[in-house]
Length: 323
Image (cartoon, rainbow, N blue to C red; front, side):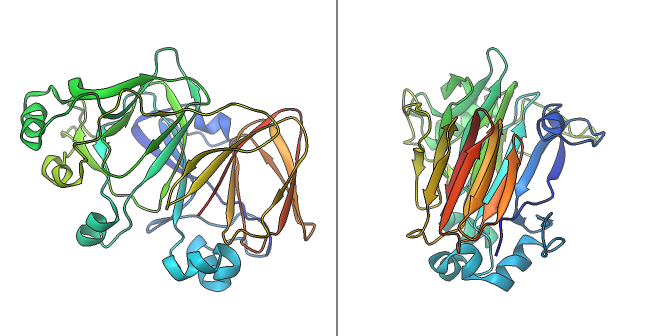
């Protein structure tokens, strides 16, 4: 097996901006690109391998063919042929809706799907850009319905100004929203289930109000999710991995590098994904497979990878994630 790159799946949205195309060094003439799905096994939006002998295969086909060699024995036992993570870049020119995602239990019951636990890493942010994450004060389900009806729901949510490098873990059940001017990498479970609670009274492309899911969201919301600060605080050090999320769904570390690093994966029973958010590097595994990775690109290393040498070209910033 060898490291895989995939064709990006570009999503034009009502709120999308103009940063994704240049960030990814693409030449498409598209406007309002809100998302680039980098690695996806979501039905109808499956990633296609872009390199090597398996070029043209879907991600689901790859898992079906290579099984535990690609994803790891425990992951294959747990998830079968469903690849467990969805990787995105999100560019919000306008505010995204205020929303919530169901957990595994509710998503399985209602949609026969995984739930949606996710994280954000802020790549860039306009001055004053914000993220919404969790409640600033306790409310009851009854008050939730009243506030949604009278337009005051946003007043009880925790809003944080952001800057590049900020990290937010967003578990299922946490009310959240990405604000205008935020450009983020998102790592999440493989799920496209979103309950939209408030959408700034926007109309869709046909001029109709966008559908809200007030009642569906009621059962998904964690009403005890109240904090002063939902940001993940971490030490920003160079030339060594800094773990920022460890969960049952994925573990993510940040690499801020100017020097060569060798990663030992001999004890890890999982694929490893690297997302390049700044700069460029070369990566070589123990089988002498090599790829170049630059800002805006994502690579999937199979579970058979034992060792990985990363050589930065100047300064490079990477997100590493696995299950």
